[in-house]
Amino acid sequence: MSAVAEVPPPVEPSEAEALDAYSHAVIAVAERVGPSVASLRVMRRVRGGQVPSGAGSAVALTPDGFLLTNAHVVGRSVTGGRATFADGHEARFEVVGRDSLSDLAVLRASGEALMPATLGDAERLRVGQLVVAIGNPHGLGGSVTAGVVSALGRSLPARSRRAGRIIDNVIQTDAALNPGNSGGALADSRGRVVGINTAVAGVGLGLAVPINGTTQQVVAQLMRDGRVRRAYIGVAGGPRPVPPQARATAGSATCVEVVEVVDGSPAARGGL
Image 1 (cartoon, rainbow, N blue to C red):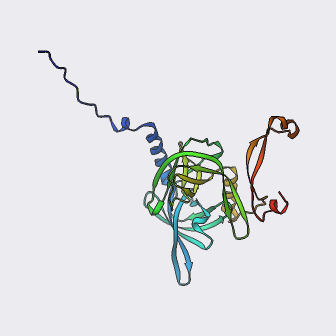
Image 2 (cartoon, rainbow, N blue to C red; image 1 turned 30 degrees about the horizontal axis):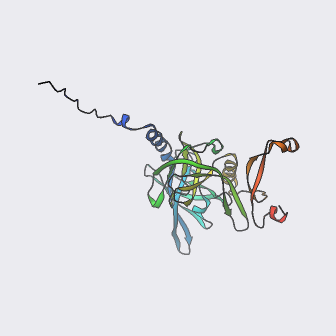
Image 3 (cartoon, rainbow, N blue to C red; image 1 turned 60 degrees about the vertical axis):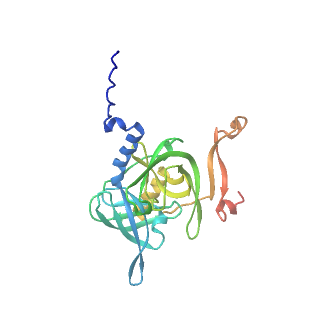
């Protein structure tokens, strides 16, 4: 009778071995960016006091209390509220400035020093790149979802009381976004905030305002002046290559294709 070789027991992998590279990346981003994301309870002033007006998320910009969120989170009549951070501490905040045409607003929180997020550059993103959304959906603070950049160069209409504008180069992602995620961080795999989550366009279709040179100028003006002054044409467009046969005449290999003209804008009045 032949001896049967004993089968060794299965080796239990350690926790570190069980986590794949994707999980490690998402965990690293959550641990780096999570402490910089606040859950907002927005209050609106009425006769006799204040009443809750909504909720959302915000990203800490500086240690001394500046926060970045969406303009639609704080609305037009909100003057302040309370921000809750991942470590549990709360702080009152006031609205420093808001800009409906970029859907960005800057807040100032009082109290303890904040852990500011590192800002990235959305212009360096590529379709298919990993992104992580951190925010406060349905009041559940510190929620993390991950996905990829589904598309770049999207356009998002925005309006103020007297004007309309198209936010260009909006980031489209399949990272799950829900009500309350607005104003939260969209970060790349290195933990750099490359967008501010702003809208849910459908199942598996979220949109984020990009962090780039233009939006950083908007943020700087809101921090300094509380408002943004701008001139605009009123078109939505995207970069396109010039056909080879026309490059010599145009003197350029790229151009801007006009995708949409905003009604009532200078472009529309000029007949573009």
